[in-house]
Length: 140
Image 1 (cartoon, rainbow, N blue to C red):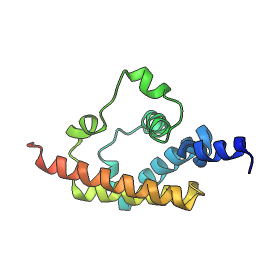
Image 2 (cartoon, rainbow, N blue to C red):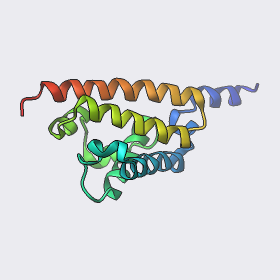
Image 3 (cartoon, helix red, strand yellow):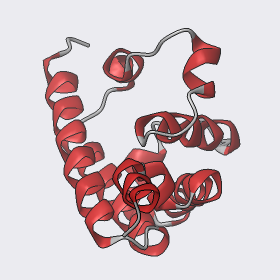
Image 4 (tube, helix red, strand yellow):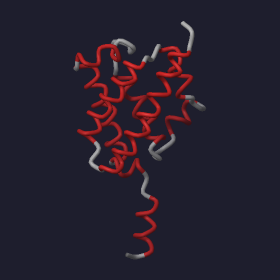
């Protein structure tokens, strides 16, 4: 392998492995389609506004940053704390599990790289558990 090919292989981001902007948008869009259409995710769906287009776009922007892609979404916001942003949503163990389940379905349909999918699943699962724990600890 040439030095430049080796360097490219070593620096390929998760964003790149997912297919860049198109792959990230496909994942975000598919996640919200699943959540919106499948009655198994009703409790999760009820936490969202009736229109999902803007949240899907925002989620795609977040994923781009999180996966090592362009930081435009973060730059436009001047910073972002994921836990604080979701603190008042009333996330429960049930809705956290629904989120992970819907995301797994979306990843199964849009993430071709098995290792990337496993890495993302692990991170999403830990994040959802933390949000459910924090939601349960937040007085209402």
